[in-house]
Length: 342
Image (cartoon, rainbow, N blue to C red):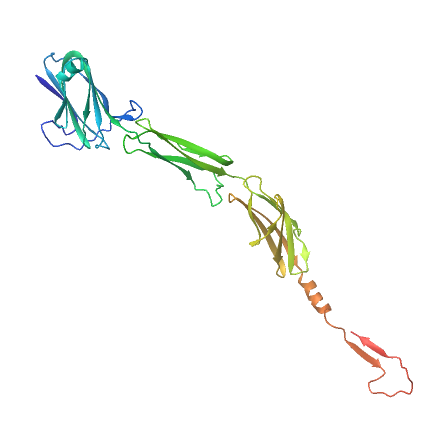
């Protein structure tokens, strides 16, 4: 009697039937560094209802990403009299191999396809067991990339919390470990965040990224002119204090125009602002290297009456001579003149 165990949707046999498209992802942890388990370890237990001379057949499909590699098939039997194994229709293990090996473990070099069929024909005691594993070589490191989201600005800073995530891949054995994302929600200056990827063969690779986060605004205050001041000149010099405690200042502007700042910081800023008649709002904006922006504003008045008075006062006085009359004749060498000045 022969009993079949089919572990696939479309059963395949070594007699050349067409392959089904069911792919089994059978890749647990690596056995040794430099090798990975392309299939298994898969345990096949004897049906206890069968006699020791009855054949039980197990059939299964699996896939590999690199069929060009040289793979090693390892078969271990426990109380199994017969363990014939076929891969893709070719017998790779037969009963005689265990006798030649002098034990219950046989290893064979095998070639694989993208999609593979393995078939085990087994005769055993009721509690017999056959374990099948296929190992593949992988001496190449995986790839890993660290990504900061959101990306830093041109100065290398972020003004919001960031998430560092890792993208891992391995074309041969696959990825066993890819680091979890790291959330940075506190202020740091040049923190190096690293992660390590491990493939199923035990090969490793690392990636790191430097993160700088500044969540605080700069400090800026206008010292002169005072808020509500009345001025008579069409331009005014604006001064005040500015500083940034973490990433450092990037720029200071007064109504959009650049201000000069002392060095070293913290220090004072100075700028000149043109005024219009009447009320004028002056806004000083300080930006740090992370892009945080702080502002301070004052409103001052350019007095139009004083401007007009100044223009009138700039005109020359008018002098009118009242005595002597224009063209009059006198008999003395000196006269007293009387005039009106306006």
